[in-house]
Length: 342
Image (cartoon, rainbow, N blue to C red):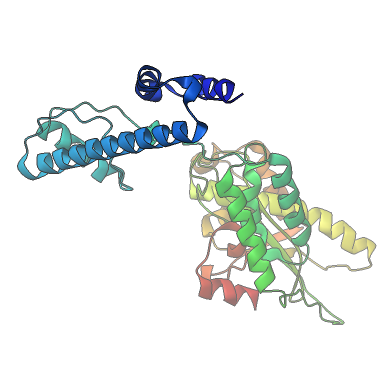
C-alpha cells in the first residue's frame, strides 16, 4: 500500500523536483522507503531551491543597484518597471533611461509577479442595470431637491456604458443628500404671487462633444415650481447663440406652464418676465430682422421672437450674481452654492 502511495507522490511532483526523484530512485529502495522519509527528502530539496532563488534575486538586485550608481550594467535585467502619475515626467524618465542604458522599451506592464495586468483607458465596467436604477432614484428625488439637477444631468449621460468612476460620482450625490436631509422646498400661502422665469447656460461645458448645458427655473412667488438642466442638442458657434437656444427651451416650458396655471384659475396679466444675463440674447429676441449674427441659428429657435412679439414673454437683464439658474448649468463654489439654496 505504501509503495503505491509513494509512486503516486513521485509521479505528481513538478519538474523542479526531478533531481530529488532521481536521487531517491538511485540511492534508496522504494520498497523500504517510508512516507516520512520521502517527505523529509522533498522538504530539504525545497529549502535548497528557495535558498538558490533568494541568492539569485539578491545578486540581481545588487547588479541593478550597481548599474544605477556607477552607470555600468553588465548583467542582463528583464522587466524593469517604473511608474509615474505625471505623463510628461514619465516620458522624460523613459527617454533618459533609454539614452543612459542599452535597453528596450516594452511598453505598458502586462505581467507582474506572475499576475496578468490588464490596463484599459475605458476604466472598470459596472452593471448598467444597477447604474440605471441609481440614476432613476436620483431623478425621482429632483422633484424636491432641484440643486442636484446639474450633477444628475452629468451622471445620466453614461447610462449605457457606465464605469466605476461614474457610479462613484452617483454615490457622492447620495452622500450629499444624506448629509442635507433638512433641505426642503417651502411654499408660502400668499394671496398674490408673481410668476417669473430665469434661464442660463454654460459655454461648451461638455469636454467631449463641446455642447452646452441649458437650464431654467420658474418661480411662483419665491418658490421654484419648475426647473431643468439639460444638454443642448447642437453645437453652438457663439455665446449669443448658446444663450438664444437656452431661452427657447425655457419659453416652450413657459407656454405649457401658462396653460396649466390658467386651468387652475391663475391668470397672469401682460407678458411673463424671463431674466437672462446676456444682453445680446435679449436684443436678438426683440429684433425681427435676421442678420449676420444669427444666420447660423436654426429656424426653430426663432420661435422665441414670435412669443416676444405677441406679448407672451418679455426678457429682462439680470446680473450674473443674481442668476439663480447657475446652479442648474455649472459647478459652483461652496459659498455661491449655499447662497442659492437660501
